[in-house]
Length: 463
Ligand code: SAH
Image (cartoon, rainbow, N blue to C red; front, side, top):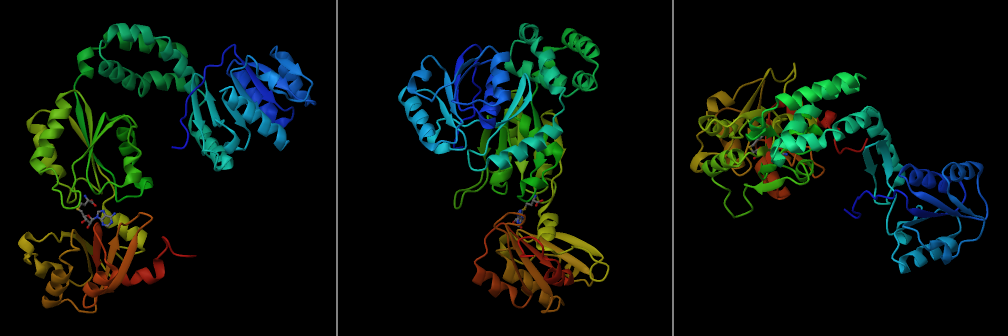
């Protein structure tokens, strides 16, 4: 983050705007909306700004800027098209340690004004750190369209209940549990549909009948984080990621996905870091139980889908044995993600009527795969964890009757910006993989469908 977003209380405080045109007007309007008292300095003034100052009892000085106007103000915005004036405002304000913004000039500013979505008391600020105000504005447009105006009324309603809820629930966990239920349930729905009285009655009822113990128990969310591209998360995954208190994740979870977890959640890494050993599975199971029993909402975040080569079954087995509540959220498994982003349909009426997911993690590096079942016409094989054993796998398939010319693809870091795809045949692939120095995570796809990639490659291809 290049800037720290904070919200400034300016009620009743004088703020200086230097400039009298449309840009100054927009900034002055924001200041007025947050309760600030306007002081505007400019030799000229557009009619709307004049009206805004009058309506809000502001000061207007028909003058050229000088440092005297900074006396007694809490914050300064320079919105002139005169570079020298902007520089003077910036320098004078910095000398007086006053926060200063020069419009469209982050270098002269000590703060920047974000694009604002105002659903007071809910306020959302969007900033591109001065890199692209237009992008920030476009994003604001998107957010505006998905956040109903009634969020403001919901904020006001629950704000009125804060003290009562504090008195009723002793711990933060209980209060948070209560509010999460209220804000995602019928009370919120009533406000959104304009029935504020009904919402208030329901909230009173919920408060009277609430059992604080209900909110003490922890829970585990076993969530599939998909193959890497954060856009492939499900809505449910995202919602639980945003409310978990602690995140237990491993190596396959991409940085972009992890970034979407609640900011202040604790993060515990249990994967392998190069030569270091991963936390053994039994210890992960016990860790989940321990955290949940402390009353935490634990996000067990896994790459791909938790029930496909993800040991999800072992983890929930332990949770069930210990009576810990849990939910399982499927994710896009790497077979689906890598195939889609590599332009390889896993089934196709002309080439494959079935698809088989296999682990290539061979015990003791011996070939104990059920080769006979794997060598079939019209079948696509997807091999997880097979990179290290690739030479053994291609050899095994050939020895058991698959054509050495069978197309095969290796997808490294599928669905992520660094994705690489290497294609070849069973006979050539080991050497190609070695030359390309592929690293895990890499997925192997074997079958006639691989040849379709020549035509269907869309991701990362220049069109
Ligand atoms: N539960 C996961 C699989 C875990 S096993 C899922 O559903 O996808 C780990 C193997 O998954 C890796 O060895 C690799 O073969 C594959 N894999 C996972 N993410 C991948 C990615 N982004 N790109 C390529 N392969 C991936």
